[in-house]
Length: 144
Image (cartoon, rainbow, N blue to C red; front, side, top):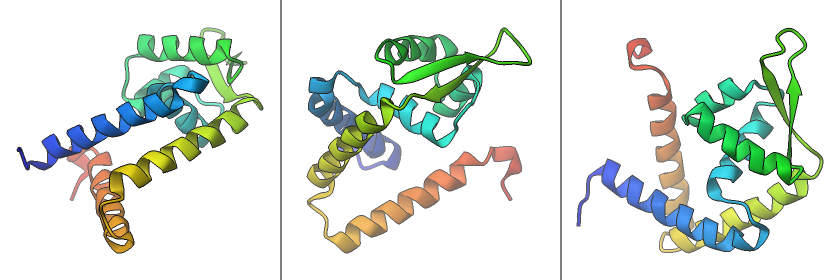
């Protein structure tokens, strides 16, 4: 068993995505599509290229996900009024109840995965992981 943080975090993340995808299969949304919806809800009216950067995916990958979400009437593309080559993105009203179901699925998966920890341990792990995420989100050249 490998105990390095990077390896363990990848393995845990992989299991979480697999379980999420299995539980969300009935509504036809993948973990990757859910990430699009979540980040779009946090960044309304953003440009496609900006959302791809936030998600750290190639623009073509995002376009495919957006096509699928748009076909389900969960996301709307709007031409930018200043630059017709640019699309801005917004969630539709149909996305909100779907997102609530997805959050419920995410909560169920989290209970399954972190159920081996006490509530205090879960809170500690969450705080520590958030601190790591926040620290690495700053580009290395801007770190103290």
